[in-house]
Image (cartoon, rainbow, N blue to C red; front, side):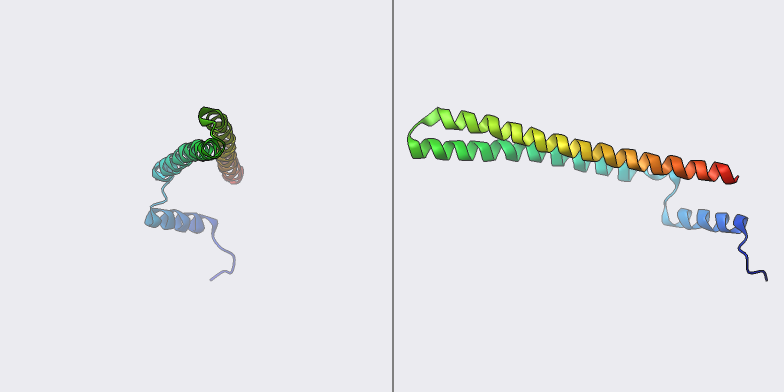
Length: 116
């Protein structure tokens, strides 16, 4: 028995392990769709919370000072702007994560093609 590993047997073993775990290359779409839906809901919640916080602060200040629509409108707009800023940073984070995953996949394919 030799001490150097057989590359072909290792590739077969990796393929069997992936098949046993259900990590086939074509079936990764379920997790990807879940992550996209999760990010979409996160962005909707961030925008909604920004609006609600702005409304609450504005309504509270209007009730305190007796100027009903002024602060409420102002802080709703500020809450919308803050919610959009947070939402866009989440979208940028999601884009960066997708690009990193694509770059890693491309690097793995190039490495596989270079050896084969």
